[in-house]
Length: 145
Image (tube, rainbow, N blue to C red; front, side, top):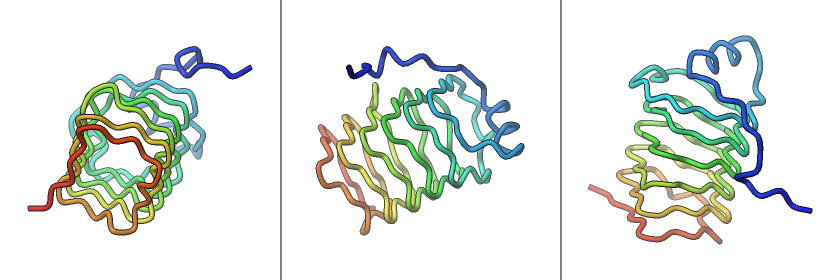
């Protein structure tokens, strides 16, 4: 029997706790909920290799380094993605509850299989090697200025 995504129990943590645990060597943050908008707290922070599968995210990740991150089946709510290096990250099955913008992000070698995005924009992103095959995008624009 498959468990629906909204039936998965999650642990709510703040950005400071996430950073503390990551600095302590923890990389597995599956099934967490982060509902904290703290502008700039993650700017320049390297969270490469973190596993956030099945998590629910509402945070400002602007300026973070998120190379090789597992975002599989995460749910996003009011996410700020600006000036982020996502190289090699996996966005399989992600879903956004509200529109989001990716601004000047490096999406090189990212995977978006079965990703569900709506009312979102990719603005001046490096996406030539991103794999958007089998993604379900509705009202999503790629803007290059």
